[in-house]
Structures are given as structure tokens and as C-alpha cells.
Image (cartoon, rainbow, N blue to C red; front, side, top):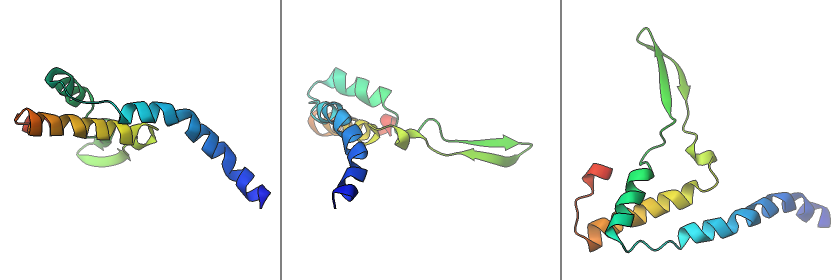
Amino acid sequence: MNNISSLHQPHNTSSDLLKPIRKWLNHINVCDRTKAHTIAKFIPAQCPFERDIVLFGRTVAHIPPLCKLNPFYDEFVSLRFRSLCYLADECGEDISSYI
């Protein structure tokens, strides 16, 4: 049984190395209108790398979204969501331009 648990240890170690950054990102408190606008502006709503390569009107290749390869993808999406919720709920702003 020790052999099985040791196989999973390298994955847990790399995950543990990123845990403080994940925790910091998850605990960013959005309580300022300017900060919320900045976060919503710089974190895109969709992955900017996804593309269709079209040649002579036909799609010849598709580049899949690579954002999920980012180890902090979920934390960034959550931070953007919290910022948009703050702007809509607390500030009463229209956030349709960010969506």
C-alpha cells in the first residue's frame, strides 16, 4: 500500500507548491469599484487563444482553448466573477459590457 501512495506524492507536492498562491487569489477581497473594473477588464471572459484557422473560406485547423492549462485558471475566473458581482450587486452598475 505504501507503493500506491508514493505514486501520487509528486502530484500532491506540485499542488502543495501552488496552494499558497491559490489561497491568496481566492481571498482577494473585491470592495473597491476601481479595483473591480480593473480585474474585470484584464481577466478575459473567454480564452483569447482559441482560434479557427481558415484558408480559402474553409476551416483547416482549430486551436483549442489553452487557458485550462493555466494552474490558476479557476481562481482567475472566480476572481473575475466576484468582481462582476460586486459591480452589479453593490455598485448597481450595468456589467453587460464585460460579458
